Image (cartoon, rainbow, N blue to C red):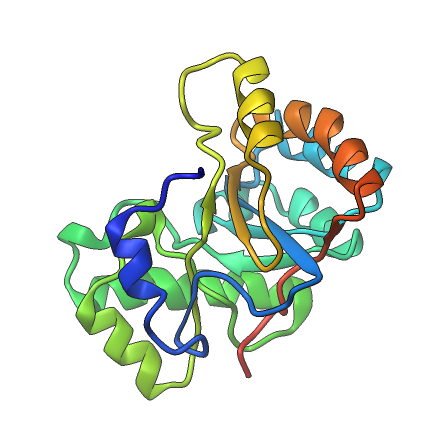
Length: 212
């Protein structure tokens, strides 16, 4: 079965409006991609998703948004959700709350230029979710997004191994699937698997863009 870290299980006990690890929708699965936009990889992934008519969610890094705005424009134009993955992608573990919030709100301001949303769903880099950040988001009725299914596409293994793992243990209904668009592994694997999954009746969607 797909490995679940203990922290993920604990976060799953929190209200979904504060931390979303999976959804209650029994009909849909949610592909999500971290660490872009990347000019060498994100367009290929977008081509793959378009070819199979699947919508997904992209958690973007602020520095890269500034560098590659045309890719962000395409993500939005293609009907995908854009979310906040911090400005620098440095782990929040060694930052105080003031610095963490600067990373969040600086990236929110960049994302707003593309979809006019005042706030965006946030996935902290490296999966770090601290008590102070949780409390801040709770006070402001904002949502953090984690995941319930880690594809492990960041491992240094051939794409064939990734395909085999996902085929043998596919995401379940309601799962939020963690993948990345800083390599071609996700695009190559999904180009093989999406036709199979769609033929089996699986349906995929983008997460709602904001919790309010």
